[in-house]
Structure formats: C-alpha cells, structure tokens
Image (cartoon, rainbow, N blue to C red):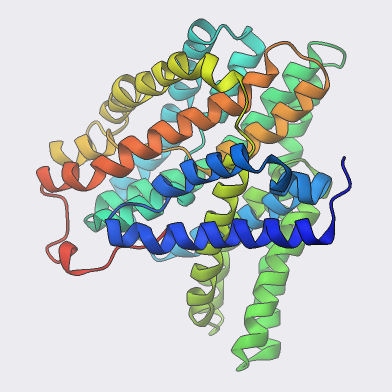
Amino acid sequence: MTQVSPADMMLAAALVFGLAMACQVIAPLLKIPALILLLPVGFLFGLLAPGLRMSEILGSAFPVAVDLMVALILFQGGMELGDIRLQGSDKKVVKRLIWIGGGLTFIAGSVATHFLLDLAWPLAFLLGAILIVSGPTVVTPILDLVRLKPRVRGILLWEGTSLDPLGAIFAVVVFQVVRATNSNSSWEAVVTLIASLLVAIVVAAVGVLIVILGQKLVHPNHILGTQVLIGTVIVASAFANFLASESGLLTALLMGVTAPRLAKRLNTSLDQVKPFFNTIASIGIGVLFISIAALVPSPIVLTIALPTIGVALILILVMRPFIALVCTRKSGLSSRERAFIGWMDPRGIVAAATASSVGASLVAAKVAGAEKLLPAAFIIIAVTVFVYGLTAVPVAAALGLRQANADEQSPAQG
C-alpha cells in the first residue's frame, strides 16, 4: 500500500465526515432519505479523489472499522426492535419473509446475475446471497420519513434488521464454497456456518451479562454506563469475529434485542443511552455509505450498469411483490398493507461491505469475474434506495398507511 501522509489522513477524514454530515443535514430539507444523497456523493468522492478513500487511508484496518461500526448500528437496531411488539400472526409473517423470502431472493438474484451479468454460477450464487441483505441502515431512515403505521413498520423493521447478520453469514458460507471449488473441502463452509451461529449465541449471552453487571456497577453515572455499553458491543463483536468470520454482526444484533429486555427484568434501564446510540448510528451510516460508495468507481461500472439495473428491476418489480404475496397469505393483513410490504426491500451497507470484503479476496485470488461483485452490488443498492426512497411516501399515502400526523413531524435523517 502507498504510504499516506498524516496531512492526507486528516484531509480524508475531514472530507468523509463533512460530506456525510452535509448530506444528512440537507436531506430532511429536501424531504428525502439521506441515503439518496450519500450514495452519489460517495461515488463522486471516490472518482475525484481516489487517493483519499478511507480504504487507502486505513489500509487493512478499513474492513475492521467497517465491521465494528456496522455492529454498533445493528446493536442500536436491535434495541429498537425490543420496543416493537409483533402480533402472533405478524411473527409468522416475519419468519416467512426471512426464510422463504430470503431463499426466493437468493435463487432469483443468482439466476438473474448469471444470465444478465454473465457471471459463472459460483459467483452468481455469491452475489445472490449478498442481495438477501436489507437492514436498518436503509429500512429505518425510509420508514422514518414515511411515518408508517406501527404494524407494517414493525414487520419491515424486524425483517430488515434480522436479515442483515443472517444474510452476511450466509454470504460468507457461499464465499467459502466458492473458494472450496478451487482447493479445499466444502465442509469448510458447513463448519463456518455452524461455528458462526454458535459463537454468536455464546458471545452475545456473555456480552449481555457484562452489560447488565456494568450498568449496575456504574449506576447512576449514565456517561460511564454509555461507555460500558459501547465498549462491550465492540469487544463482543470483535471477539466473535476473531473466533468465527462474520459472527460479530449476529452477536451485536442478539445483544441489542436481548440486553434491554433483561435489563428491565433486573430493574436496570438502557433508555438513557438510546439518544446517544441514535447519534452514533446516524454518523456511522453516513460515513460508511460515503466510504464504501467511494470504492466503486472503475471502468467496469459502465459495462455492467444496464444489465445490473435489469437485475435490480427484476428484484423490485417481480420478486418482492411475489414474495410478499406468498409470505403474507392468511396473515390478517389488509390488501393495502400487503401491497406496501411488497414495495419495500432496499439493500444497505452490510450488502456493500460484504461485497467489498469477499470481492477483494476473490480478485486477489484471480477468480474470473470477481471484479464485478462490488460494482454490481453497489448499483443494485443504489437502484433500490432511489426507487424505494423516492416512492415510499407517495405509495404509503396512496394506500392510506401513513399516520395522521405524518406531515407534522420532521423526518429522520438516517
């Protein structure tokens, strides 16, 4: 890697954080999700100043920083899920959307990328696995702007937040299979999956206990309580990733869902740290989208743009409505609620981060076609963010699913 001067590091940090902040301040004024600005701004930043990309500045530490920031965002998303109570039938809908919907998305994405992008089947399966991932980094800001009625909002948030770590783990398993076709046994992929799930559960359980004990020790000092919480999430997710690849994201989500509930049962509250975590998540989303979008510019983007847009439109116009129709059947949801669920499946930062990580490894291994993974994933993320971000409010309004005071509230910056 080229030696980077401290001055360049400072300039890169100033530009990335400044651009992220500017996008998030301007977006509410335009009444659009900040993601619609973050993606093109990040792309242009990478195009105009390639030497100042965070991947160049941080080097091998860049994917580590991305993983830890995503872990904090998923923890925050998990805490928000703890406040959302799903009805019995809605829990079934969420499970169907994750397991049936995720499976159908994987199949459709794999087939579409194989034929439209001319990817070999192993790489097509890998990109199809990456495209499963949605997540709170995109779903939450869009839904905050829409001010959707609670029931449908809860289903979409549970689906998106749960799919983030599960989809990332599945993508890593497929990645192991792709690598195994060259040398190793495919058993490595099976071991990776089992190890990731077990490690995430065990480390998350220990992490939650540390959070609760730490909160009790520092009570009522909320500043120290916040430090305990952030530190524990980072330590737990990093240690989980050390033990099993990509298990840190699931660890963080499990901790986020479990810690607030257990804390309440033990007469301890995490409510005082939520505003701070919302700030961390907002900053993190902005910086991550700018940083990863900056990785994309390359001549190959132009050659794959049209077929990749075709893949995105198949997922948006064909697969998602079909998945929603199947997974919400006999759920008690109205036809309008089912229609909106069929019109909301954006891809987020975890999909981009996963594509960046596995794509770089396969490019280094000189796997033919691997250079298409990150640009293709970015284009699909951008198309889904633009389509859903710009249409979510009018679609929800047309279906009568916005809350009565929606226009009186300021949209989240996301």
